[in-house]
Image (tube, rainbow over all chains, first blue to last red; front, side, top):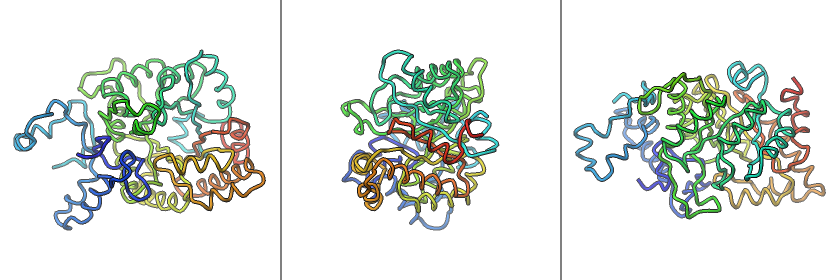
Length: 93
Length: 300
């Protein structure tokens, strides 16, 4: 995650006219880059292109330093706080 | 009519204004600014350390204005506080009657006068909209209940003038799906981009579900336009717009006519629910603008 603002839900309002980052002007905004890549995903499965528009929950900082692969396998990285509402119909896995 | 009602019924165009930053002092100062601005607009936005400069806090000014009878939109940014502090601010302000929240990601610390500060961004703008919506429904992010919770009106911001356009349109949808009932748009000087953005969010249903409120900034001269173009992230002021003001013999009047044209254009677009005014002139121009367009409580 190279977004200097550690944003998880797309580009902030500070993206420059040339698509570069508000904080590091010589770097392309990582969300602009991610968006371009999502648009170039295969047409099927459709979800591959659409997932970039899904609302991601707040980061679980308690997992910092853990193995992300292990957390992917055991599902820990998909656990959300009990009060997180999110957008249900768009978060189906 | 309250801002909340106008957002829901859109009986007439809404006009909101940014409340000036307060830098300490006493409540008298808040009262003076309110007396000037309050009667002209439907609601005022209380900012949260705008452009990453420290000021009297959003919560303190919002409560002061609430006590003066203002319809307050309390802006909350993600830059300076983690999720605990942000939830505490929202629930605490609601205790005093501040029930309208505008959630923003916030400018980076490097935009401000203390670029050495640690940036937080524990939540981002869309997440904050969802968390505030949870508080409105009576639940902290942890799942714990808010005591005797009050319904909040939650909104956000989007910038139609920063690329990529299709992502901005989808992001507006995401924010509304997360619970935003209004979106105040960032300032921009490229009307064709506002048109494209509005057409996109009319097509994806955002304008049905949320009141969309573009922003205009009242300035006095071309220097202010040059400053925004050079220094403010996400704002581009085309050279022909700067020239229009710079080449005029009466720059304050040319600046006003520029804003007048922007308001006329914005209000003509399908899906636009009103106008948000940021006033850097500090003269009688807000009154002139709302009068010219019959906006606000004095003209309705």
